[in-house]
Amino acid sequence: MTSPDLPLLSVRSPADLLAAVPYLLGFHPTDSVVVVALRGKRVVFVARADLAGTESRPEANGPTTVDQTTVDQTTVDPPPGADEIAAYIAEIVARQQVESTVAIGYGPAEQVTPAVDATRAALELAGLRVLDALRVTDGRYWSYLCVDPGCCPMEGKAYDPTSSQVAAEATFAGKVALPDRAALTSQVAPLGGPVRESMRRATRRAEERAVRLLDSAPSADLLGGRALRSAGASAIRTAMDRHRQGGRLTDDEVAWLSVLLTHVPVRDHAWERTDGFEWQQALWTEVTRRVEPGLVAAPASLLAFAAWRAGHGALAAVAVERALRDQPDYSLALLLDEMLRNGVQPSTLDGWPKVGSGRRRGRTTRRRSRGDTRGRARRRTNTRPGALA
Image 1 (cartoon, rainbow, N blue to C red):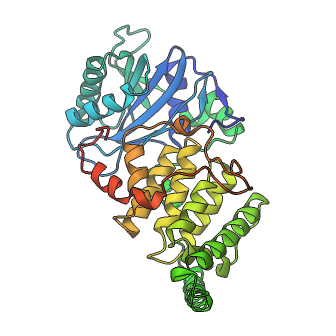
Image 2 (image 1 turned 180 degrees about the vertical axis):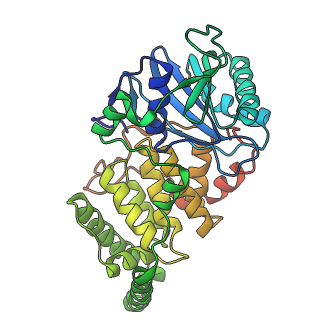
Image 3 (image 1 turned 90 degrees about the vertical axis):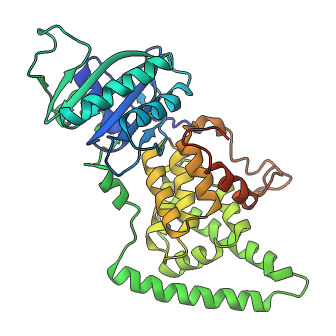
């Protein structure tokens, strides 16, 4: 999906590029190595990984536009070690059919330098030109390639990403750069306090309602499958209509939807109707945060898919993580995790979903159920990081 209102950010210097990176990723990177990849003068991919020895995972983001540049993000899980991380990122970036790159390291020199050196070498080995290699430490940046003291002094150059023209343009365009990745993770974290207790009671009511639904299903409806699908379609339609109009679901509506989404055909019905629209991201974020443990995987996976379709790779990553913490073997989450780790671009699904393409509105073209992907997703995640299945 390509958003019709992507911001154009004018990048004319290393300082401008550094100011743009947080808006491309969605948060300010720390203790990270970032690769900005270009096709001609257009940024088409941005990838981030933690420095060797740190705990969180690498990401990439898009689509977003920087000086007429479309950006795609993905999230990857490299093995530990600077060389391994560098090789993995270079492999992912090279798949995007880019021509040149800028490598940026964030953190203390003793950790950044080996990471950036390894990344430069891996990118060049992959046939990618490295336009610049930068280190950002304590509000200053240095270039590993520029030796002109008039341009790149030994003490580095001070810059403030929050006060630049690029930051102002991005903010005006509605782009957000959170303080760090933890702030992004908190956006999909479960709500607590009175909300949690209210949702606990609502979920008990929803489970009892589901039992009554199945008990009342006719004998010809094997295991109540048709009844569940009909109820699920109605709940999904209500939720989407409500959020499309800027509304919010009640606790009982969230709980009922979360119980129905455990039925794979219902989950698939929602998946087929999920793209990258902001209201859909808001819907699945709300449901993900409010549902009870054990019911998180489906809405979190749908949030991950919506975020990935919109090019918000980092948000997709934390949503997948939330889904897999709830259910480590959840097939859709595993499939999305693999797509993110392999740098699959959202544009590969342009034109999808094809809701309304069948004989009646709401029907999709016939294809294998997502429920059939469980085995494939499990097998693919056993391949080495970055390998295409």
